[in-house]
Amino acid sequence: MTSRWSAPRGVTPETSRLLVERAHEEIIAGNLGDARLLDVRELVRESWRRSLASAVGAEDLPPLEFTREAIEAYRRDHPLAGARDMIRALLIPGDAASSGVVVAVGDAAGRLLWVEGDHGIQTLTSDMGFVAGANWSEQKVGTSAPGTALQLGQSVQIQGAEHFNRFVQPWSCTAAPVRDPETREILGVIDVTGGVEAVTPQAQLLVDATARAVESELLVARLRQRAEPQAPVTTPRRAPDRARASLRVLGQERAYLAVEGEGVATRTPLGARHAEILVMLVVNRQGLSAERLTELVYGEGASIDTLRPEMVRLRKFLARVAPFVELESRPYRLKPALESDAHHVLSLLDRGAPRVALAAYTGDVLTGSVSPGVEEFRNTVRTALREALIAEASVEVLLEYADTEAGQDDLEVLQLALELLPARSPKRSMLVSRIERLA
Image 1 (cartoon, rainbow, N blue to C red):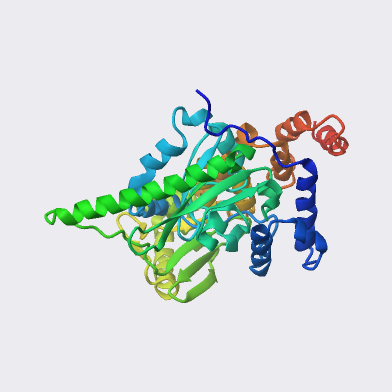
Image 2 (image 1 turned 180 degrees about the vertical axis):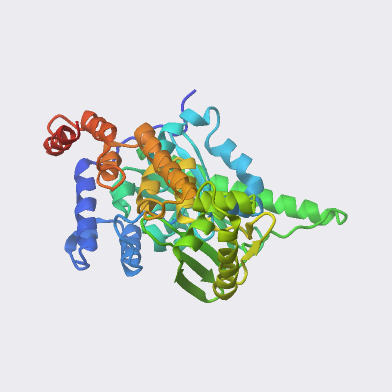
């Protein structure tokens, strides 16, 4: 069967691509009056200007705005949750794993809720942050089909070098907003990403038709629900806008507690013991007995009498800095559970985004701590990142890892990077020198 994502005839000439790339360099440099910008489509040119005005970096990775638990709850209640099967059937029929494209569904703010399709393309696009939970609005990553479609409220095609972000320029995409069938408020966006086959006129017609089909299905379901008054009417819940706390422990000897929301944004340093205790409670969300927590923080044979006064002081600290976080006893646990930047890295690895995880990994967990539990968690995070990079990452990402404190003396990583480098790469001599020093 012929794929609906077949390559278009009359692909854009190389000269046209170079013009767009040069124009992109000029606008990034701030040369807004350069005549070469006139060679770029007006839609793209204006999107570049908006991206520049929003202070978007040309190499910024999209922020992850959901924890693993939060995104599950949010997308379960999202209006487009029930349309996922229809979208998949219309845009990636047959074997999704070899469809040649990736299909994403996002919310009205540009945050991706589902990303599925060709496994090979997913592996590559995840390195630029095209994963569930990432924000692909224009204000965060600049010109892209999903973000610009939401900005303009219409279907959009962005090809290659037209993207504002350099990491995204190898890809092309078509996206269309989905609206509430009655209020016409934008509910979300549907995007197809791949090679040039994803930006044909037929691709735009198909994505547009899928968006309209979803809107029609939403209306039918709503009318059917009204005709059956005995059926309970549910309103999608919105994520609550309340204060939340997170633990920042990567790349520093002493952590701090970040509190955001409800007009609050504070970062309060933690004492060494409080940081170690909180890390153990974040790792062990189900709770810990006083004996086990003492062992993890102080080491085997320590008395729980050493722990108890610290727990009293920690309760007072939380009551002052984050009163919505309760420290429960028997077992000791936090309610609600805290997130940490280290767990954020592990979540990115679980989603198949090693490059984004590496960017988020600013160093080891509590580098100065010798608590047994902290040392074990530190090794867990470092090992998980290393193994993911070796298994999935490109040579560029391996070299980035080799420049970190964790990877600078990793002989296996350096040897693998050397194998992957082109024969004439100027980086080879530097790698050979480092390998000889370690061997």
